[in-house]
Image (tube, rainbow, N blue to C red; front, side):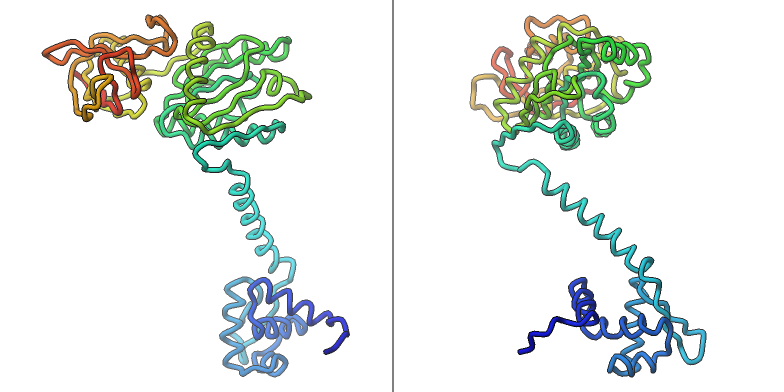
Length: 366
């Protein structure tokens, strides 16, 4: 067995094979490269293969951008594409592949219950965007106004998917952040398309996110407000934690904010999985003077009865999503529905104060 180091040609040939060249294709390609331009028969002789095989191999190499085949000349001439150009496409493909694999590597795990402590603001931004992009029904978000650009595009995508977005923009203590918030408030067009409802928030309030009442994020206000903060954030995927976070947000932070923007009512009919969105849509329609009916996939609270379709006309809403609010507590968002035989109160799945709990609802003109 030889102890001699491999020659330069052997090293290049081995590297080409690592990147998908067969042994014969590597030999043929090197024969073309060393000559710059040559006939098929010359390349065949140098590579030790038949001329017909050279044509087959060079057709494949030409398709991948490594050689050019001039078959308008007689005999056919094969020319090597400049290496910088030929391997530039390969580098681009590798960069694209690296980005895709990196995104998969950094994606939060799909385990049912996960927590992650994060100390990098850049990573927090990625987590916020990935959580918002994964949302199917609801996004509840509170963060400093100056960080809105980080998630703006993701929020627009969520709204385009029909997701209910409740957004609170906080001002940090300091003139710069406060002016950011005032600027956004004064130019409502910058908020249009980002959320169904936008409110101003308290300076110093924590940043938080909850999507579909399943996953989210929470951090001290300073982590996203200050440029050199050393605090930590927590991202999570756990239903119970998300429910507590949403309850705290709607009960404590949402009511004290000033309403900056409310979207126009959605076109009817429309179907929602998240009941808060049903209440929001019905409330906006009723404010325009439109009578609305609902088809509810619901059952009586506290029973094991099967879910059935209950249809009726909405006569009132108990909500704190838009002003003026009339709910007794922040988490109360329900409808009063006249079924024709009785008036019932309806809440979301897991409701305990209302008469019925609802898994899905369709809002339509009465």
